[in-house]
Length: 211
Image 1: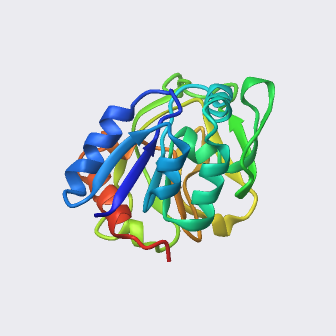
Image 2 (image 1 turned 135 degrees about the vertical axis):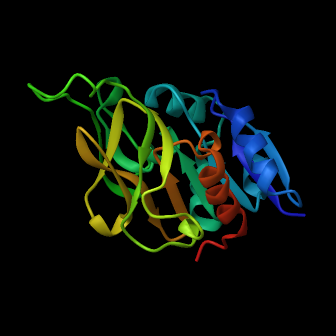
Image 3 (image 1 turned 180 degrees about the vertical axis):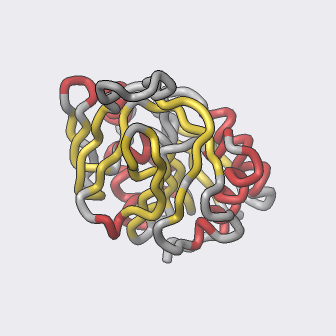
């Protein structure tokens, strides 16, 4: 039986992620875990996260998960969600500046509402918004280009190489809302909160071999 590890960084939303994955992976064992050995044994790994980047990395360090996460990124299909996407970049401006995992070159920046911008541009960016698919990828299969997904974030990823970007969204700026490289796919939005299209993406991840 396939095992899917949802890694527990203590940043919330784990139950909704695991329940959504269970819904699309009925033949798999979905495990919410902070055990590094369980992450190492998993066939697929999901890195979720809400809140602050500093807390996310502190939990990784305190729970001894760093090496297991890095090994997963070199070994099995990995899905990053929200902070789990931002953590893939080299650096974030959050918490006074913090180093990321450096899987994807680039920086995580805070939204800044320009002078004169309309009042609807509130920070955090919260609610439904469209994702434009900028590259074909197996995780987009069956999902219409321009589909709406649910976002909650004050920071956004700015990868250096456009080839790492597979989806973009417009909010104050056009930002990367999905990135991919090799066995990694990561999204700024929350597929577990995004109804049918979010479940479709999670189902695609369950079937994806990381190629």
